[in-house]
Amino acid sequence: MKIYETWDAFLVEQLKEQGNVSDYLAGVMDEYQTHGNIATVQLALQYVVEAQGGIPEFAKKTGIETKILSEALEITNKLQIGTLRIIFNALGCYLSIRPLETVDTHIEIAS
Image (cartoon, rainbow, N blue to C red):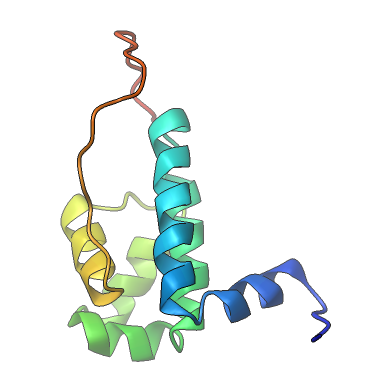
């Protein structure tokens, strides 16, 4: 069994396997749906992109300029849904819609 120095190193190693990426992102998107914190999604995508060879390598897969991809994944910036779709497509994933298990008519907009 390999010993990892940090949680980040372990996570990146696990995210090198495609099956782990889709499961991880599904969990992250569920968390986003509950709490509305887009920074959580951006941080998760930073780990996934690192596992895929880093921003320059992943930018080639997406067709997004390296600088733009890097800025999109910064938690201080707003992530656009179109960019998210491109990133997910490059990872072999897609955004989907499904009914909420419980209906809460109170919606808060995250700022």
